[in-house]
Length: 303
Image (cartoon, rainbow, N blue to C red; front, side, top):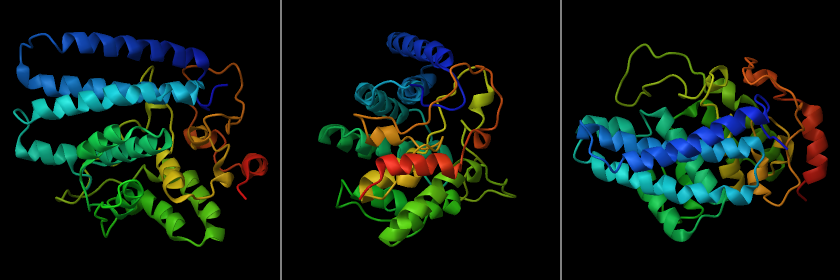
């Protein structure tokens, strides 16, 4: 059963096939000589990005969770290779803006997603250590550092949030008494997409994000590239801290199946026929529908 609420199976069939073929093509082409070798690091990094997109697209289509970890090793491998090549190409300023969570919202979210996926999919210790070496930013963000520290106890914990909006809500859920966690976690998931559309900044400083919202924020309006709007950050916190996610089950942004690989699905059945060029707003696809959440909560309720 398809898990995504905005596109249909035909859409994902098309773009999963495209990304699989494009990854293979890029892997072969990356071995050839470039007219401008300074482009090679970013070209190799795109392979890593495509691996993440393919993993998420396959989740959106409804593919078995057991088939998703296969993309982790090539994702990490090509990211490592891009970093090795980039040392000789990227300036000190470029290195900072590419990697610092405080100024690169996209990188922060990507790191949060990969940490969450790594925890949920139970990647090997070796792959986990390689991922953390790439994630870096130790001691820079209280929330993500604490999530990482659940599997890496010696991780230094930051004292602030790089992005209070929307992530303060998730930190509040983590810190709340047990009887409040489910409600606060749902509030984070329900506001997550809307609150990532942040107001423009009047001026940039060293500790201000370069972009107002994630690069993928309106991908559902494009012909291709959309992989689903999944709040993997919530799954990361649930896995790390054992939060009660029963109220989130059935929410169109909550990828609950990642934590229940043997099923049944936590997603609401979608109409079989849906336009692949649908322009509906993501927040209008059922987010916050308490009736759906409550029905699924009863089915999956954690005692």
